[in-house]
Length: 139
Image 1 (cartoon, rainbow, N blue to C red):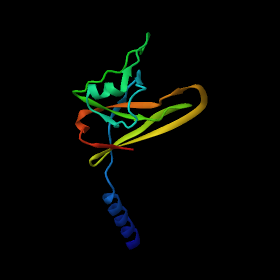
Image 2 (image 1 turned 90 degrees about the vertical axis):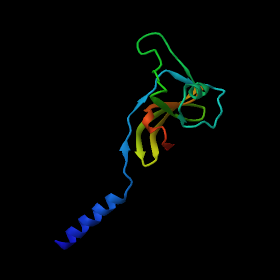
Image 3 (image 1 turned 180 degrees about the vertical axis):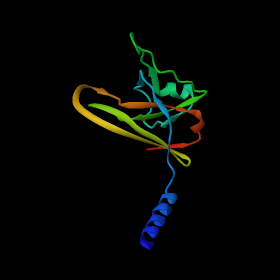
Image 4 (image 1 turned 135 degrees about the horizontal axis):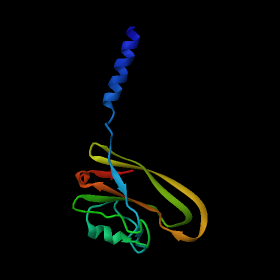
């Protein structure tokens, strides 16, 4: 019985020492394109429309869901994950965005497919509530 109590105490102690992770809600932005002549070393976090416009443009098209996702930079900011150009079909799927102290940790799944006859710039854009703007973004 004493061993069980000791094990339970040790488990609770370990759980209390680990960093608390809190899921952060986000929305994936659709219908944007990465500006080809943008600098390679870009920040993952964009907090103004002007900064965002340096790296991304709107890619609207006709039909249902053809408009780019609206971003209100007074209430939101954007986290971008951009990969190098490639001729391989590549998708980035966000798995989670968590708050860990003073940090937002982004986890993504990268899926690669067949070679293509053209190059692409794989990226994903996450729209996040501005209350997290002071957090550092890491992967």
